Every structure is written in structure tokens, then in C-alpha cells.
Length: 135
Image (cartoon, rainbow, N blue to C red; front, side):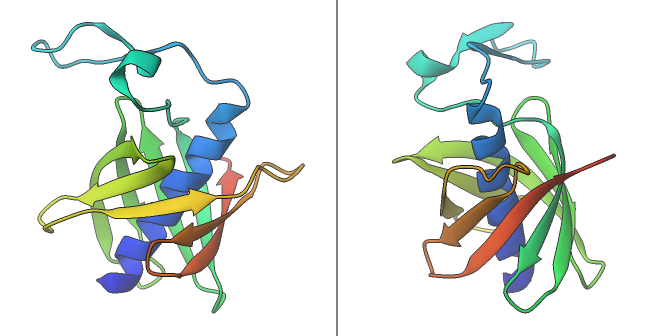
């Protein structure tokens, strides 16, 4: 479970870096109780790019992450265990909340490499590389 949490955070951070290259000014929502468009600057977070990502850990294990529109995520860890939750930005880091798990995990990332991959470091010191992938 701990490895899955680390993977999720790493991916979110990578997706944040990928969207920083062309981040939209608003984020759409399908929740009828929330305005249809939220100015991300006013909301205090940057948009996280929806898409598919590989999270490659230092030990070579790879988790498969999908960032969905609306700042939600789902993942299948290298051990085939599934998870999901929500994403937010705090203090310049991308943070992941895992459904059914107390608390959240945050990651800081380097600027994206030419191939779009991002080196990320978790608050716990764990390191990984987040790479965009095809669906």
C-alpha cells in the first residue's frame, strides 16, 4: 500500500509539470454543486494535465497512472493493486489523496525533460520519474 501511495504522488507531480507547459486558465467540473469553470489561479492550484503516465521507481518497478479531468486519478501499481482519489496543489507541490486512506502525500518535481518526463521527490524523500504514455 505504501508503494502505491508513493507512485500516485509521483505521477501527479509529473502530470503537473507536463501541464505547466500549456496550462489552461480554467478547470471544468461535472459536479452540479460547483461552478462549471474555476479560475485555477484564484483557486490556489495549477491544473494537472489529464492523461496516462508511467511512474518509474528507483527500484525499476512501474506503476500505471491515469489523471482524469476534474483533478481525480486512478492507478494500478506494479503489484496490480488498484487505487484512486483526488489531486490538489499545496506549497508548490502536487498532493494526492487516496480514497479510503487518511491524509495525503505531496511531491515536488523538476522541470520537464525534453521527452516530457519529470523527476519527482516525495516529502518522505522517495524519488521516481513520471513519464507520459499513450492510452
